[in-house]
Image (tube, rainbow, N blue to C red; front, side, top):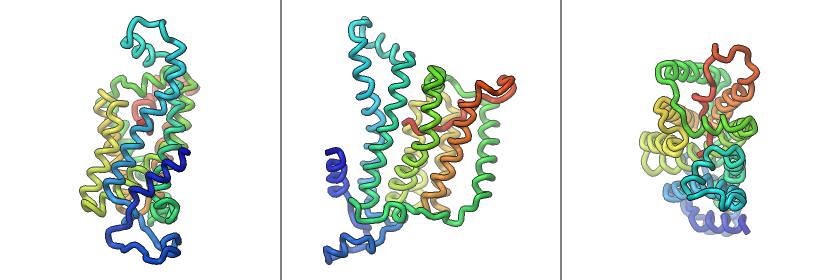
Length: 298
């Protein structure tokens, strides 16, 4: 039933590229010989915005659904909803449930994205988004990662991160840290890049041009993370810079794969530090890795 609902959505709103005509031969229309490319996708900007909005909505709805039974079990223990809301923000079990709920939210988002990108299974997912290196070499990843981490360390030394929702989440329990690290490395980069540098950028650059597309995608990526990192201005600034860097990689290579690889490496390195932090001797001598971590928990 869920798959059929997503399929109907993708069929209703999918479109052919503006510079293509729809094949008159039904057999040809069902064939993957009708190609779509990263810069000429089979969806338009309104569809891209709809998918983006659905991805944000999923991050809100799925945690609420998973949290509901736990809330019911606590019914009558709090004087009002304000007290209950404060408890939900500090209770380790409630926080863990909200973190775990991001996994099915990511899965649902990826399913919707797959149906839209493939035009309900007509086109190749990888070919449409771009699954080549695009000339991006292994040493490019190293140089950019080193430069960005150096910049992040400099910024944080002058403007330390202020307390925010992510930091409170990571302090709630070690189990939450492990789940966050898992999602940051194995689900967030893929889902995030497919939505932002895949679906959004591909449609926007065709409709509005490259410069406007870069600005819009960078802004939207940062926007959905502001509630999570507010009021830490330095972290929001670095997150925006990271989004710009990833989008420019997409522009330069014409492919989504380098963005996914870079984002995975970036999050994976920081996730490793999060997990190892308690075991590193003399932790006061090294920067706390949490302030610089940029995870897709939207």
